Length: 224
Image 1 (cartoon, rainbow, N blue to C red):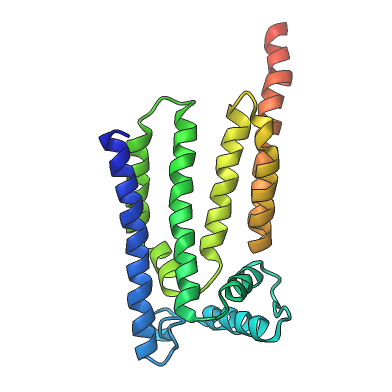
Image 2 (cartoon, helix red, strand yellow; image 1 turned 120 degrees about the vertical axis):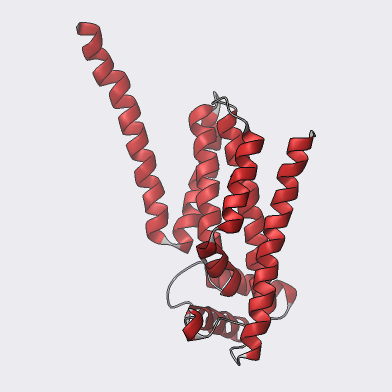
């Protein structure tokens, strides 16, 4: 591992820790405001989504039956985590989301490296640049760091889909990644339906354009 690669993983760790520290600080601030650590006060941009999710996770955990009015996979997933560890806790649930942050950042790096195998560019510099941008992006820091919601898992499954799409299209044995791509899209769809459908639509559009150019426009050019 060279120095650039070490720097990439150092940035991976630092950005993940940044989100953990944001989550920890806002959790304790929320507790001090009587909001149980779930969200920020309304005048600071807080809402009720975190309360809704945590209430349904707790109900599912305590009753042993699924309480999931929205149908999102987030509630069953977090309930399964609570059942495995034997307790449900706001800080712990938010910490599980931070694990999702580390996974998302890892997938960003892997996707860039997969693209770099085809296109000649410095993937280590691209990875560090992407990590720094993610660290400084206020919207994601607020959404992921201050609330308990499904957004981080939507981003993560989207990156799974992006990674396996690159592997599918660019590798000679790319068809081996098709089952993984299908699972990634299904995971994305289970967290937010239209996000999964957007990946399917984008993939279909890509192949339509690719094969239209190859077999239609290519033939016309040959005739000319």
